[in-house]
Image (tube, rainbow, N blue to C red; front, side, top):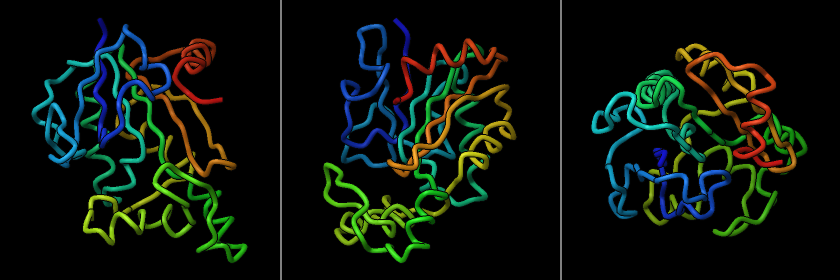
Amino acid sequence: MKSFLHVGCGPVTQSSLIGFNSPDWREIRFDIDPNVKPDILGTLTDMALVESGSVDALFSSHNIEHVYPHEVHLALREFHRVIKDDGMVVITCPDLQSVCAAVAQDRLLDPLYESPAGPISAIDILYGYRTSIARGNTYMAHKCGFTYSTLNNAFREAGFACSFGGSRPEHYDLWLMAFKTQRSNEEMMQIAKAYLPD
């Protein structure tokens, strides 16, 4: 059985993760918040409790924007360290390009979409979900952000050999798969069918 590190898992379970919601994968839950009962407690920039080259994949949903810009490289180097040589990272985060287009239309506070937690506005995508932060969950604050090109470049600078993905402007998010070893575009596209949304 292959294992994947679910970074910043929060309350989300494996059953809702595209591609990883199969019996072929064993989930290892990793989070900074002890209240979500992770298997491993830690931060994106210090994953020392995760052995180097120990997981086949790493999944990160809406976490990388919670570190400061100067910490992004540290976090992605940790991602690179913990996956096996033939491993992959699947990551999603806000797309600042589409969010800023909404802001340019003076829609900073307008609900852009409905999430399970409630309506989400551009201000929530830029700075973190206001409702959670107001309740004292400051882990939800956003400290940096990305367009697709800057996210892709950050992975390359952290040592990943290749990547594949794109933006979904209608969902205000970015999706990217990154690999430690070189893959052809055809191979990455085939893998992406299982792990990236349409």
